[in-house]
Amino acid sequence: MTAAERLARLRLIRTPHVGPVSWHHLMMRFGSGEAALEALPDLVLRGGAGKARIAPAEVAQRELDRVAELGARHIFSDEADYSPLLREVEGAPPVIVVRGDTAMLRRPCVAIVGARNASAAACRFARQLAVDLATRDITVVSGLARGVDTAAHIGALGGSTAAVIASGIDIAFPPENAALQEKIASDQLLIAEQPPGAEPLARHFPSRNRIIAGLAQGTVVIEAAPRSGSLITARRAGDYGREVMAVPGSPLDPRAQGCNLLIREGATLIQNVDDVIEAVGPIDTRMVREAAQTFVVASAAPDAGEGERRGVTELLGPTPVAIDELVRQSGQPSTMVQLVLLELELAGRIERHAGAKVSLV
Image: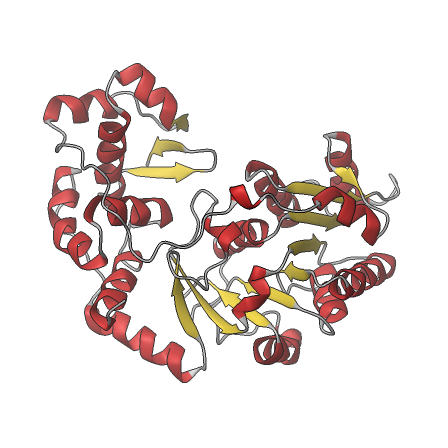
């Protein structure tokens, strides 16, 4: 990949209203970041907005330079070092920033997540489970949060562990984990989706959680409240067709309610590392595609006319609706519906949701 193409791809994902799904649609339609940037103003105009606010080249170049200064690098989704499992999930990040050894993502990966205010028993269990997984040559993935996440990373330090953070690669959060984060970046693998300098805002954590779930063959939850981020990670794992596992706890402990709920809904009950190995099992290689060296332009749909655009737009509302349902009700080809949705998203008029659903903003 040329330096100009890397810069164009980064500008594309840093442009307002270009999310992971629309980025991939643009790349498949136009074949390169440079061609997609050139087409972007016209697409935004057809979507009903004014002038496109494309990320400036100098801003993207500063990000590339800063990442290099930090001893990190960008990996795009079609490059060989990108996680094969993460590449398969809906809304996979087009680019991640990494420090460390990406070979860890080629090994079997299991995520361990749980409560920030975890009990001492939960932290001890997480740490020991991570030790046992690491001795089996399994990479432990977690989010470097307080409590269970921290215990899991510490337990896996003797083997391999990957930490996914909600901030830029140069921001330590929580602050007390700064030394652990640096050790993981130096000896293991640290992953960020946000650009350097980005603070860990609340909206970044669900995005981080989808990466944790996407990297792993299965996710183990150890203590979680019913509406916690750990359960979001588990739900995403289930959506991706990955194994969801949970450690049961006392009904009297609110921190165990989320895990007990997952088990009641069909998650695998976990008591030791053998339970995890049995649940995850060997991964079918047919599930994972090797990285393509370039994006191959799909057969481009003709530009949508006003009639097609109106037919799709009138079916949208504030309630999320499945894209397949839009295709069925509009009577339009799937490629045409996807093109109209792409134009609307680039214009900031729709929002994408999990499960391939969209709604009007």
